[in-house]
Length: 110
Image (cartoon, rainbow, N blue to C red; front, side):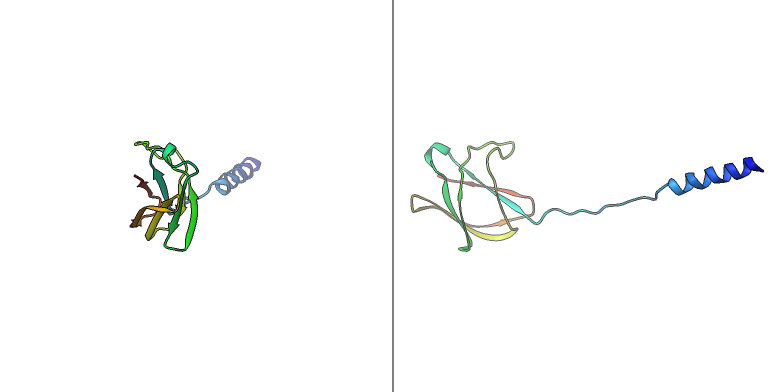
């Protein structure tokens, strides 16, 4: 009788320690990235970037690496944006772009 109670107690502990299947759903961050590509020696001190006439920042210019971004990238929201880039108060790039979640858009400067 004691053996049966011992087996039942061990069985109950074993069953109670089991967990069911756990699932986790994740999605991509709603964020995209800009990378500015050119010869960094031509743009000492970086370039001035304007996004939709609302966001202004100074950006570092990176050398082009084909496999993946190697320099600094800048986060922006996804969707359609008008990007303008200037250096020494002269506009060198202006374009409307569409950028998806987790996409890194390379802006190539002259």
